[in-house]
Image (cartoon, rainbow, N blue to C red):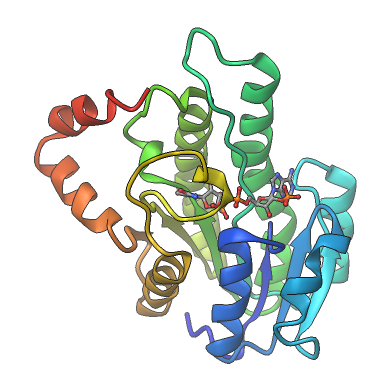
Length: 241
Ligand SMILES: NC(=O)c1ccc[n+]([C@@H]2O[C@H](COP(=O)([O-])OP(=O)(O)OC[C@H]3O[C@@H](n4cnc5c(N)ncnc54)[C@H](OP(=O)(O)O)[C@@H]3O)[C@@H](O)[C@H]2O)c1
């Protein structure tokens, strides 16, 4: 789809990759961006990017009430970016169960419920796209991120189901599978990280080109290695405790 002239909604737009999406979408000529965050008071830096084209929206993606209200308020959306994400560190045998539940609630259930609410909106506006921020960890696990891996694997599976239902309605479901990105999420992790702007650029280029699965920035190389030898990449990631 063309991104210029779209009306976008970005979840988790107050910082990190979400804020970078808002900036990049504005640069590419969108008519409007709904910047969604669970605490609207944290959106001031994002809104300052272009107060005339940014509309703040309160949206905790685990709240059915807020999801419904957002879909009613943002009734002109054609491009939904499911960006909000949660990462609880911990291995499969010791992860805190509340953290595990939160990762699943935000990364899988939230993605599904926000998409469910906005699909009729996008369809009524003539079609468009839903972009899901997944991760290479959707298909290869880093043991120290066990809950996150599982939630993003579930979201990957769910998004393929959504794709089959939404394609006939003129809605492309686009999955992005980045490698590590330099944001708060990985602040304490010593690993190679891509710049958020490089990741967002590649995802939006992929959306415009009509790609359904996108491996932005350094993820392309890891994905090629995984396709060539899945076990070798699994063993390499297994060292990430
Ligand atoms: N960073 C990476 O290495 C990496 C790699 C691959 C994929 N990703 C994915 O890219 C996306 C953006 O990540 P990031 O690096 O920008 O993470 P981040 O810096 O930790 O920011 C996470 C964002 O999600 C929001 N969020 C968390 N729970 C929410 C909820 N219940 N409702 C609404 N918003 C919620 C946060 O809001 P608050 O400010 O209110 O907490 C924040 O805006 C995520 O889906 C992540 O899984 C990240």
